[in-house]
Image (cartoon, rainbow over all chains, first blue to last red; front, side, top):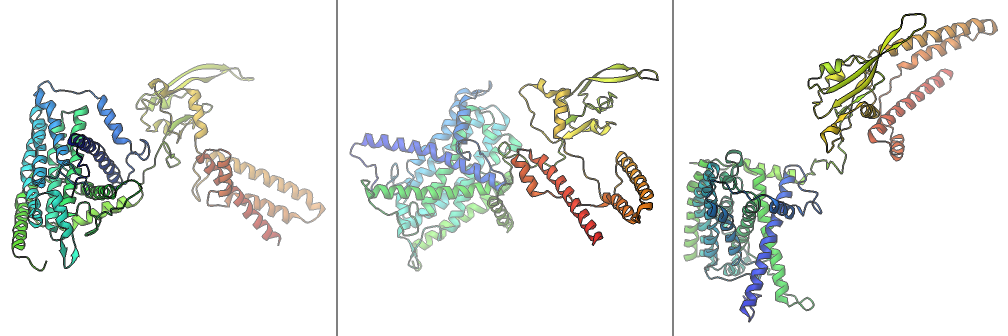
Length: 352
Length: 254
């Protein structure tokens, strides 16, 4: 499938792609943030933001403006350069990952052959930003948060990668676009089906592991506010803090988009139903399909993020030992089993 | 080995989802006035006519937030020695200090202090939170009517005294009437029964309800909700009493 922005002038195409990705990166995390505000509030029997513009839709931009005005405090004992760079290091991977995630038919930055490998590798750079923040803040809470985060990311990176590896095995490609297309051709007993059915265990593993990767409750031990203030973000104020928050929501969007791509058929409306290519006035059908597909991906991302918020509202935080135990004793063995089973079925297919 | 996840996880998810689906109980305050109980402790009102400057409230106040200034005035009395009377010059409550314990209201022996449910008097300056006598007097308009007595409760002593006096007077009048009319014709029984009914009036008990029509009328006139509710209740009780009285009178005549 061709990229919609595959223009002859590669520089124009590049600028357009980067511009659109930046817009996506700045808008969609805010939408997910608004979703979190509202869903969490209603789950706690309250309204959430209601004043900014209409039903609080302007709350997050308003918060951003507030963060801009705040004093940018640099602790005197902090390692200045590292402290200042950390939010950027945490934020940039999210944008870079977006470049390879397909957001619709023909709507992606670059269709890499090693797409999923690239996405997972780059998204783990995020932890370096967190460790930098934790170490350079010269604050015991930040340091503990940073180290907890590192331990957690090492533990949960494995089930995440293994669950993705099982999907790669089944699809026979590492390209994210290729995985979506492989899902479109996959059938169970003649009925088109996405990978969430054969890879149900993998979906669960991937989802839980991505919650832990993002420090989302119930895996928010590294930023457990009731014991270590706010982990690596304790000393941050103003725009730098806002960057960390944006990185969290962007991470939610990115990992949800990858989950949707790996298990939920990407831009396909239903299993075997691609977005229709209809010409509307002067807009060509491929662009219309791209827009509809983008809407479908966005809907799936919103639904997956809803699950993350739902878990946050429901489950209490795991203790550090429970957290490690869960990963090493439950998720990783299950993930390895999943990979083995998929590999066996790939070599000796049964009735597919 | 960790234990397996149990059904509780799903139950929890169900609970949060159910809460999300039910409407939130939040009252969007500045847009919607809160539905407060009528005896809410909002602000303290002063009926300065009742104040005798006994200083009990100021003395009992745990925060010392009541300021009272007064002077003595001699009142010449005919046929006796001159008396002195306390004149209240200043009565102020500093609501920045007040902790709304209500001890001053409890301790006031002359019913000069009352709770009012009004609470919207925040200011930009802490000085404006010291309410002077005039402002405290204005809060009196927002004090709800006293609680109705329980069924079978003794009436307040002053009301009881007034009632017995009125009854005595009525009896005397009835006797006089009987004495004068005995010579004219034999309508003694009528007068007696009328007297009896009058004394029985007080015993008609009506369960208080808000009279919807009257309430809507009052609201349309721009009366505050709380006041309107109280007035509508009083109206209902009054009209209901009248109706019962009329019924009884009708029944007796028939």
